[in-house]
Structures are given as structure tokens and as C-alpha cells.
Length: 514
Image (cartoon, rainbow, N blue to C red; front, side, top):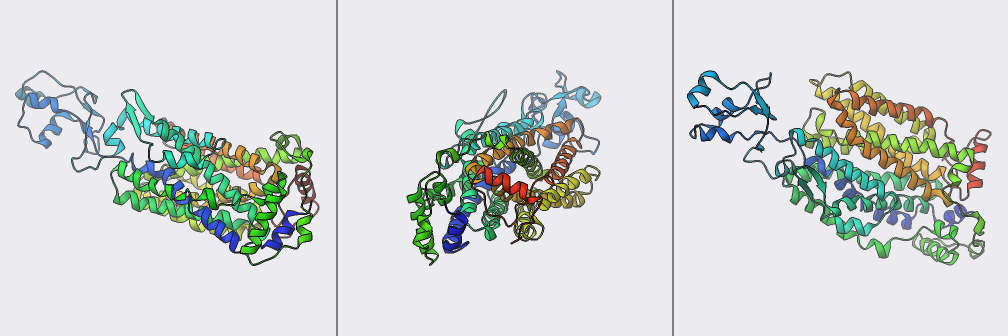
């Protein structure tokens, strides 16, 4: 069988066909960003205090300020405590005024919120004080859905469930509705499949472009979320406004092409030829008939399976290191993104900056990966991101600008590392194992995403624990990435044998940089 890369050069490495494909792929990314991070604005901190209406039975004419002064203890800063109140007593107002109230307890009859506050998940379901941890648990459930989505993907699930996913809270905890639990199954599948579909259709010199462009659209979605959440404070309306556009993507079923490379590897030669001829026609190119005639079905024995990732030493090393790198990327990326409101600045501004910084991180990688190669970029980005998180542990909270600056640099580095991982992963695994390798790496990433919101719960023991974890893990991953082979400027490998040979030859021959 002829080299698929040679045919793709004849079709055009990055012609009109590929550009239209990347544009279509990018349309889904803003909606994916919305569903990843919209919960941040539905569970924001809202001023609150215990419901102490019991005192009105003793003195119904008290003003609001008098009621709070008598029934709510104060913090050392002078503000009212949000989760404690004075224990109710059966005494007259004169006795209360003379002796005051001394013993305190947690809120017994719920909480009171500002009357002008728009309806949010926090206020509707009282997700404050000892129930605040349910916010992290709900995010854990969402990430668990993403883990399942690494194995079971369906864009139909995404479209149907995005509007139906409301939270339901019982007295004992918070639950996601079955639809919202299913929602991330589809979104991760969409993201992964679209990313590799774009990668397999472009030539080696443009391989970074589909990932960069689609990821930048994901970043634009994060920036748009900040504006949308600022303008729409009601959480139900916010969900509707952010979810409705996904219904416009049903046309993907009819217009997105299959991967011709994948079809050829599966023995569907005629289908692959038709797609290649169509792509060449759109690019105003022509494929010599003799070149197409060289495409023949693969022998059955050449198909790969998941065990091939671990049978051969070089693939096994690359697989394990990439598993860990994806895990760390996801752990730290979500660790920073989901804590965007805790760095001391306005959450809407912080979200806008966090989204904006990803654009230069991703586009900058196009050139950095060309100049320095995949291995050095992957390792250095992880080391930089980890270093920023570790430095943050020594910065006082009363310096929010400094903390936010370090967080933005860390987000820049981890975003660049995440982008590099997509490109690197596509090149390390041969075609027969590429989707399998991506699926397993995605599973590893989702495990990191699942753990990420739970790591924040450790801060109740010491406020620096989470950042120490978010800092130390990428440092170790960055060091390990320098053990990987360089793939810059090399054609995608189709078989495990070719991939092993490619890894072995790297130590003796220097690849040509594009």
C-alpha cells in the first residue's frame, strides 16, 4: 500500500477542503467551553447569614440591623459570621439586652440572602456553609461523566441533554439529574473525535493548525462565558442561553467527512478514494490515477489493539509517560480554572483573562513546536506551570494582583502543555492505535479532572495543600517528558512496527524540522 502522506500531499496539505473542515470543527468548541465552566457562575459566593427570625416572636418591631446585632456573632474583622448564630433563648427582650447572648450554634432554620440577589443554585438550594462542599461534589460528578465520555461518545447525547441538566438537591446532598450526568459523555467524545479528524486530514507541515484553531475557539467560548454570565445572572436562563446553540450543530451528521486515512486502514479503499478525490476537487487539485491504484486493502494481521500499546518497549514507554502527562495537564488545568474566583480579583474579569491568555498560549505553540520540537516544549511547559503553582503557595492572599499574575502565567503554561499533548499524542501513536491511544489518554485526563475539584477540599487542613499538589505533579511530568522521542517533521506512522522503528531511529538520525 502506498504511503498515505504522499497522497495527501497531492490532495493539498492545507487547502480549501481542510480549512472548511477546521472551521466546522471549531464551531462546536465555544459550547464545550460553556458546559465545562458555567457552574463557576452558578455557585458563586453570595453574602448570607443564618435565619434568626425567632427573635421576632420576642420583639417583632426590631429593625434588620438590630436583629443581626442581637442574634449573629461577628468575625474578628467586624463583619457578621455567615454560618453561626447565637442559640435562641426563652427570655424577654430586656434580659437579652442586659445580658446578651453567649452560646453559638450552626444555622438551624436555613439562611437569608440579599433580597436583590438573582436566583442562583447557591440561593435556591442553600449551597453554603457545611453544604458548600456539595459544589465540588457536583463538579466531581460532571468530571466522572467526562471519564465515561472518553469511552462512550455521542454528539446526540450532548445536544439532547444540555438543556435538561438541572441540579436537584435533597436534604442529604446534591444530585445531578440523569440528563446532566449524561451531558459530558457526548461533549468529550465530540472534542476528541473532532480534534483527530482535523489532524488526520492535514499534511505534516500544518498538523498543529487544526488543534490550535479549534482550541482557540474553546478559549473564545470561555471569554464569552464571562460576558454571558455577567449579563444573565439567573442560573436557569444562563443554562438555556449557553446550551441552545448546540442544537445548530446537527448538520454535522451530513457534512463532516470521515477520515480517509482511517477508512484506508480499515480496508474501505473505495470510500477512501472517493473522499480523497472530493478533497482534491475542492482544493482544485487532481490525484494521478496510478497513485490511487496503489491503495490496496490492509492485511488483517496488521490491525492493532490496546495491548499493542504495551507489548513493545518503546510504545509502552511513550504510552505510560503520555498517560501521566495528560493526567497532570487535566488536574492542573481544571485546578486553576475551577478556582478562578479564589485568586482575589473579580470572577468575571478573572474568567475573561483566563480565557484570553489561552489564545496566545495556543497560537504561540504553532511556532514554538516548529522551532524547538514537541519534546522540549512539552517538558518545559509542564515545568513552568508547576513552578508558578509552587511559588503561589508563598504569596500572601492580601496581594491578589501578584497571585493572579502567577495564576495567569501558570494557566498559560498548562494550556500550552495541553495543546502540545494533543499534537504529540497524534504523532506518537500509529494510525492503527491512534484512536485507542487517544481514548486511553483521555481516560487518564478525565481521572485528573475528577480528582481536581476534590483536591480543593484538602485546603481545610492547610490552605497550601492543593497548590502544592498542582505544582509538584507537573514538575515530575515535565522531567519524564524529556524521555520521549521527538516527532517534529515526521510523517504519521500507520503501523506499530513503523512507530517502533521511528522511535529507534531517532537516536541515530535527526528529523527534519518543518
